Length: 497
Image (cartoon, rainbow, N blue to C red; front, side, top):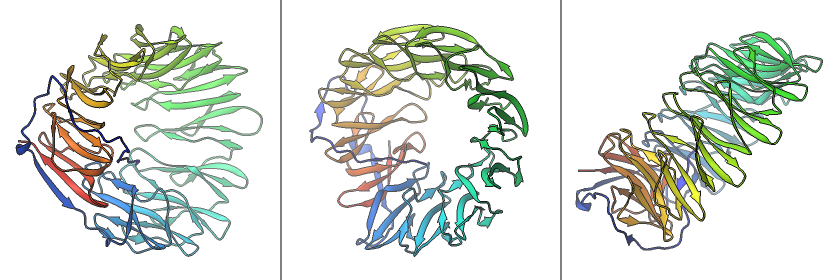
């Protein structure tokens, strides 16, 4: 769970008032509540980059240090100390109910989960959690030669090696698979059962419903084959990335025959190309797209049909209802947005397509000359020095984005510029009822919360989490922040009238 801290270094710029203000909330009506997190004594050093935040921004875990000793602080409670804690630690479940980390004491490594210390090992891998965070697995080395997978504190049978990047829980959290070395061969262990031995074995995948699995393998000779639900199928010189459809019924993967590649969908091979990109299924599983290269030109294959060729294909995406597909493409020095086979543009540069929640609208950011603009349903907005990605409101009626003008940033909502500007703006977010729009405004390493064009009073040195601001209902904003001066971590709550 990767998190970001908004604590950017910027030039000191005062607030500038611009025309066409957004409807503003009276500052006196905004209520702010700040509750400090209990933590280690002041002499401890906090590592902000280690901070992990729960999805609801209510729980916080981070690493701190006192001289040569390290500890983890979770919701204000400090763990026992260790000689070191791994860089990727701590791990925090999305709901904030579980915290875990890897720590070293002397020459031994330990995994600590919910304050319970596991056995000592010569080495431990990164931690692998089940999607529901109820189960934890990791690889451990013991006796200087044996590798075991430890699941919920219990060791599985040991092997001469275990692939550190191939430990995987199924989406429903009930199945666990990993790849190990046995008698100098590779085997997959799934649900505690061993597969046949292979000379080569790729990363495996589960289907979204967790009932199916697939991986690529090789046994002697020079041919590769797919193993789907335990059955071997196909034979080719090489195989590419494979994917199940969202409904788990379909499987797509690429195969190489001689110097050419073909996409195999539902067991049927497609036309031959020099190179192929990854296959992507639509949300309803009925449609499939992939990029194909022939010579120096690339084409998108949509539902089996080859579209116009370009020099390069870039960002792509399906609408939420699966009825529309858009992608950006480069032809010479110009770029286009292709929506359902029709080109919009040209532009000098462009970003990924953004569909509205109801799939009826498409927006994207594009560059014309030295300026950037947002295009919504084919209509160009005002040009700026730079713009951020457009963000549709939950009710599909509004579009907002951040724009740079005169070296500072403003909020643009439905084509109107906000009344205040900052050196930096970030973390744009709509309220669930689409009535309010919030973001962070930064000046000289400090940040404030902005709502509907009004700036809250309290200044912070940074916000934690992605997203750093969360609407907890239509009129309540929640976040975790670092309050000035120093490194005090606090819970922040803003209430609208």
